[in-house]
Length: 309
Image 1: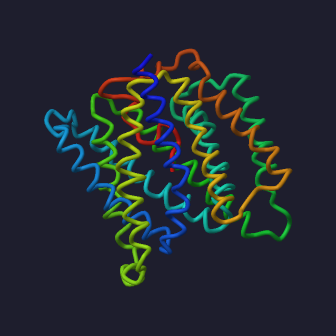
Image 2: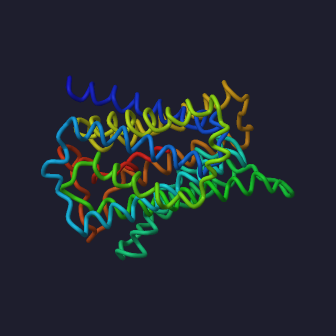
């Protein structure tokens, strides 16, 4: 029980940190492409140093196939961040974060499309409930193109997030820290053509926020998450993951005065509850069982296991 309590504290702290990510992105003053590029750069340094100190590079477990899957997942991850950060600017941190949590439903659809997993009537019902919640949360009125644009960015980020999860769940026997390291390293050459280093050089105090994104939200946060995964049952991980949107909404209100309206607020619990039910649902008959939490390959070695930003 003491071990589980420690895991609960670690994962809660990681989700609280994740909830502050939007503020770091906005306050940096950089464009989403620059933000993600430097998050990858400083995050790679943090994860690389940590993995080296812990001796994770010895007996790393990578094969050519596993490395390729990690790189593919990394491509999805970095562009998922770009779209999410675009959504922050087009709407608000609160709205973007809630819509972003539709990821489990896209993962269900990917399983049905590529693995021919049967979607049960129950899951279809939760998908329908989440769609109703999404309509309510969007609060989009005719002519409000900014809100509609932000909604589209957040949904695109959720799709890419689901693709990254789908791919990285196929990697076993490799420490999650190393997979995360490969994924952020992949982001550097991918985003290099889009980064405006001239604009980045003029950020001034914004550099502190960018360094924080790499060291805190990519280094420290992932270390805390992976440590917690090895100590907690899947159900508790799924429940604690919703600390992230709760904190994000609170921070958005406290720092920027953004809050969702009454009608939008009615949609939030629909998405959260439906997402939780789908996440905890038993695998469809004939589907491969999910790997057990814990040990070297905790949470399928994926940095997106709990839908963090």
